[in-house]
Length: 338
Image 1 (cartoon, rainbow, N blue to C red):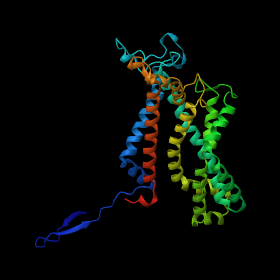
Image 2 (image 1 turned 30 degrees about the horizontal axis):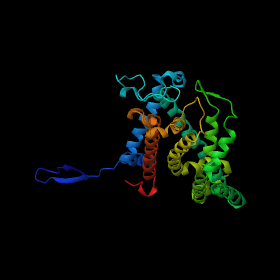
Image 3 (image 1 turned 90 degrees about the vertical axis):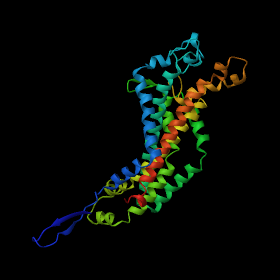
């Protein structure tokens, strides 16, 4: 509190006059942002994810996709070149079973894995938001039908059906062009399959938000002045349900990236020649028996084929989970008081 003084006369004493100071006010999103910045793990995750994006999308400035996909059988299964004698930087992460540079494939594979993760989460959030909104707003028979559908989808062993659907659809879609690149038709299939088994939790979250908010006074007032149901749902209730949707999306992103990785590892994800972190791991599967083979230590187990994509997946998932934890704490309504 600041203090000022005033003088009423020569013989009078100086009296302190208190000047109240006002604390700066912040919006709820401003408070959430400040709380997020105080979450050290979340900030570290954000920095880490930014570096991963820089690696995946900035690395294409130095390596062409043609270089990443061009075989060189004379240099197949070469360990990282800085371990060779003499050391060089020709293949910093080694080469794969047909001589392609692993670093270049990590760069372009990272793009595909991140695109699949974000696109599948966006699609899952959209499906879940629509179903949850309709269920929570209209209640009654609409709610009953949609929730039975949601429960049936939850009861399905998603990994088992994901593998079956991938096996059935992979190869049935022709290659596509995206951002000037020719991609395997398996990419949209993987996005669709991951999304179709990932919307159920989101639908329940949105439903509970809609059931709570539709009883609020501002919604009653909107109905009283004749606002249509569509406008109430999408312009009044949904924007007030964004916080839990954002948290779900951030945590669902980690699950989507992991799902792409293990489907690709089984050979049922993104198909060659398009690279992803999952199908790079799949190549290493054929060479695990070399882990104890009587060959030199550097080439034993063809370790570079599984080490680098595994590290990329682990670091990406950790960063996304840290961000999700930070968003959950920052957007917690009980904590939005400074």
